[in-house]
Amino acid sequence: EGLDLLRNALAAASLSEDEHIFAEACILPTLIEALFTTNNAPDELETLVPRFRAAAKAESRKKKRLGFAEMRSLYLSARLHEARGRPDEAVGEVRALLALMRENQADVQKQQGPIHQLLLLALKQLKILDLTVGDKMLILSVAAEMAKLDNWTGPRVK
Image 1: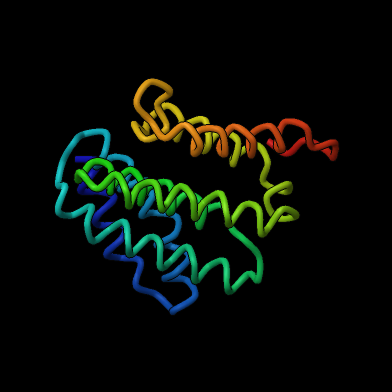
Image 2 (image 1 turned 30 degrees about the vertical axis):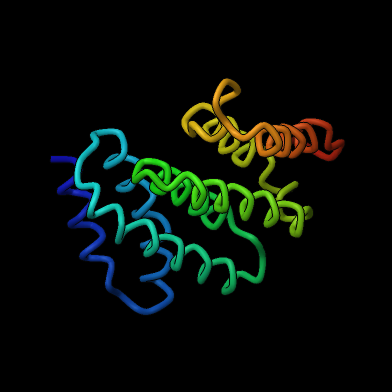
């Protein structure tokens, strides 16, 4: 029932272009996470994840700064690739996430708490980041970015 409510909210989100992008960037990740959690509709995920990625990128461009949604879209894309048996693509998405963080340090520091949580979630849920079977260099890169967030001396944003 909750999935249907989210789908209906997404369908009703067709307002103006700006409102539509914002609504998609807000609603889609919740729907995608619910679909991953319930293991429902893997084919639906194949269309929703790229749709969220496009909305998140558009929102970042509109705001002229890196948004958390854009980083989250890369994580969800990595999850989708891994779930569909495409580990190389999943690794590519995590590398893209790390590169985006390195290129946008000022924006990352402003969103330090949520980004730290996102990286913890990635370490927990992605097999490619599992210490026993994952890509060791990629795991070290994620850990290095987390350490940067932990060592940043500015005000803590949670």
